[in-house]
Image (tube, rainbow, N blue to C red; front, side, top):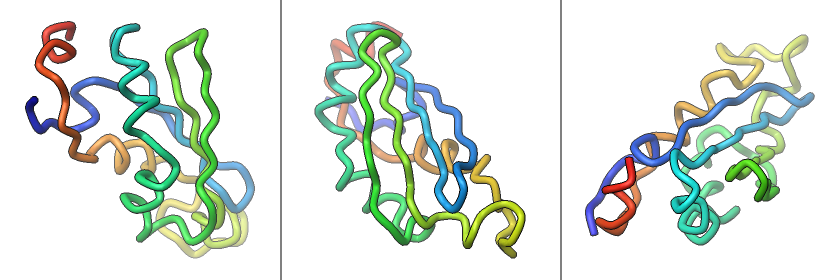
Length: 112
């Protein structure tokens, strides 16, 4: 096992959905996806993003593309047109999540 940032084994993209942000995390290799499903729980993402996300975190699995989609409810201060937040559309939220530390098995790190 080695401690690495999520960005080492996945990439991401984010944007806005009203007052919530939408964060997609995509495994860099198909064999990494089951590991991501196991460790990237709604609770873990909520803990990592608690300074941004004031509401519930919802997770959706996209098996066909090896991705997880998270909705961070109440994370945009009302949404893009009314928020005073610097990132009122959540464009940086994927970058924030990709900085999460994970203990990753060595055999998965060899795939990337």
